Amino acid sequence: MLLCASSPSTDPLELAVELTRDRGRIVVVGETRIDIDRAPMYEKELELRMSRSYGPGRYDREYEERGRDLPPGYVRWTEQRNMEAFLDLAASGRVSPAELTTHRFPVDDAAKAYDVLTGHGGARSFGILLEYPASLAHRPHTVRLAARPVVRETGVGLVGAGAFARSTLLPSLMAAGASLVAVTSETGLTAADVASRFGFARVADSVADVLDDDTIGAVVIATRHSSHAALAAAALRAGKATFVEKPLALDRSELAEIEAALSHDSVLMVGFNRRFAPHVTRLRDVFDGVGDLVLTMRVNAGPLADDHWLHDPQEGGGRLLGEGCHFVDLLATLAGGFAVHAHASAVPQRGRPLECSDSFSGQIRFPHAVADLVYSGSGDTGLPKERLEVLGGGISAVLDDFCRLDVYRGGRRKTWRSRRDKGHRATIARFLAAVRAEVEAPRAETYLASTELTFALADSLRTGEVVELSG
Image (tube, rainbow, N blue to C red; front, side, top):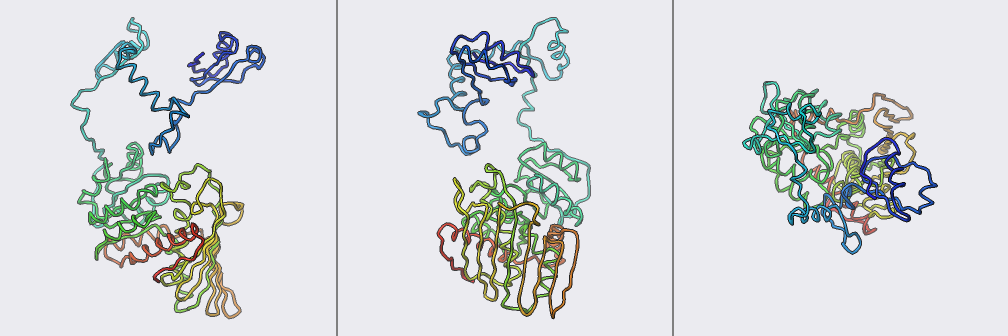
């Protein structure tokens, strides 16, 4: 018995139980309640099954997005094979989809279609098609909003319009006086909504559309991790000042592509915003000229769902490459040099490679500093998320969650307090100032080095060995 009804009540299932023969099978295809009395199911010894939409493979990222098929010997009727079987039936004439369409109307006559649908037209209907003129089928469409003056040097194109871009990057861009020219995203409706809310001049239909726009001098990339490197390299090759959210790359081949795209006058910044946080700027001033530093960074990151995209090595890179890079860059910035060697360990987790573990620690040796990074995804969220300690030259400092800095020197303590500020706005302001040539951009090699250092820690997680770097 196939139960295709949709109902907020149990009536359809109760009827199906009544109609199904002894030891029969009921397959629930529609969305209907299934909390019915056990007795009639027991008396007939009925089997109740749920159909997952189009079949096995549905909602499975590995299957739907990466094309990893399920072997026919184990799963005969997958989502794709179900559709193939239907198309075969239609091609052979054993199923006639045309019979499902009882009426066709030009879109201009949509009102007549609704009359038929509601029964006002006198004719019974099953399937009604609204047809658009063929000339509109493949016409590119650009959504243009209110005209606004654009200054080329700060004309910004945004690639990716997700939650972080909306909540953090765009307010920072607006605060820094950027001219928002064009936005593009995987979902056109999302891009249109963002364009309207934040005052972009238009919605671009592709990344190429953004890169080909001469009024855009700077590109901000806020997509998922797996596309960062390719998009950043393309923007650099197009001669655009480029801001890309972290991580810069997920492997060394991607990093090499970015390095090859850099020229002597390229502006490249990565969303390693903590190096620009006000309290970190103060820390750098406090320890200016002080060598032999000891740095300890503890991150209480909290858990993520097992199926979170960040855990996917191809899409998110895991928590070390995808999030830990933030803290690797911060430690490297405070150490004031390029790392000499690195070692890391992780808590093993079933079904996940070590480099994608939720919890790990790393030890880094710099020419004039040593640093420890402790990152945990299993702590209690009541504990403040981030704590940094820096010791050296008779000075000790503790930065608590980017809202309190204590500096101990000469037996005295000095404290600075503020609202939590991890440097997002300062980072964007520095990027736009560099685009306008008001200040120098941070050296691109510092971003490359922090990313390479993160790769070295990931290598150490896999091998258990100390990884030497060029320093």
